[in-house]
Length: 74
Image 1 (cartoon, rainbow, N blue to C red):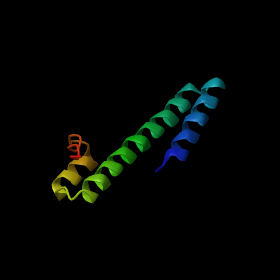
Image 2: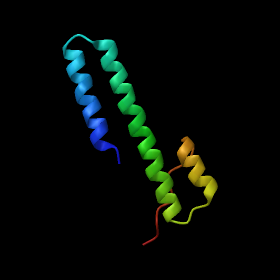
Image 3: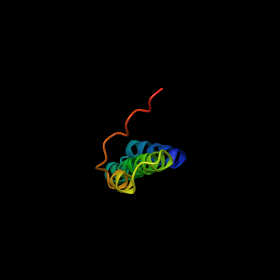
Image 4: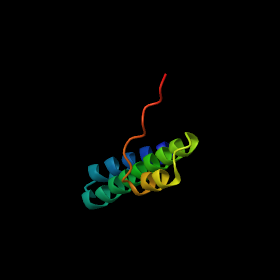
């Protein structure tokens, strides 16, 4: 969902680190990490919702304590 923003933040972090702004680069990397993690949680919650999984499982996915969803039977 936010792949382009994460990519730009990581590129900016690399440029800042190259210029000697290591602490600021770390801030950009941490921001990218947080956005990436939250995006994964949202994607998991949407997947659970679309599969009809109970609302508590969606909440757990958003707060980061949900296990991986069960595999669909084929």
